[in-house]
Image (tube, rainbow, N blue to C red):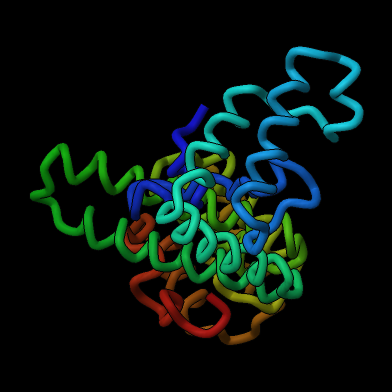
Length: 257
């Protein structure tokens, strides 16, 4: 079980995604809220505690919660200062979840972009040390989690799959990279970045002929696209793929990212 502070929705920083927000008031009861007097809140807590000792009280107290979560919730809410601090977080999360799905997804997408940029900066250059590599991998995985959360809200947003595919490629998870890149091209055939990533990952998997075939499909959908034409020339000439997937071609941080 996470510590009470994790229920505030405070994540471990850029090194990983934030833990899910836990509504500590809801843990005490559906009627609990930030403006409830402390003595009434204590009564709810005590009622919940009895739930664990008497099955007959459980139905009256509301949906069951674990004893450890109940104690963690009360540890925060019993203290005036901690309750006040938690109230700010509670309100922010309630407001966030009141937003339309697309706006909520955009929050996670932008956070993913920030994490991706930090990861790329962390691992830039050939002289990186082991700790930088490890931290960069953590950042890429954290970015993936943000895109995954966003995709659950807006599963037809092609940008989420192209961005997550880049992160998968960075950590050398080629099967998942290909899957996301393929999904991106299905959702938005005229989005050149999806075809670019798909060709890149197929080439890295050693499927050179298929990579060139997918590039031709991309060029049929996005005629005369400069980045795809340049990539086709590189691959056809046996030059292999660029190490900087989205650093060139205006893809990184551009419109649609």
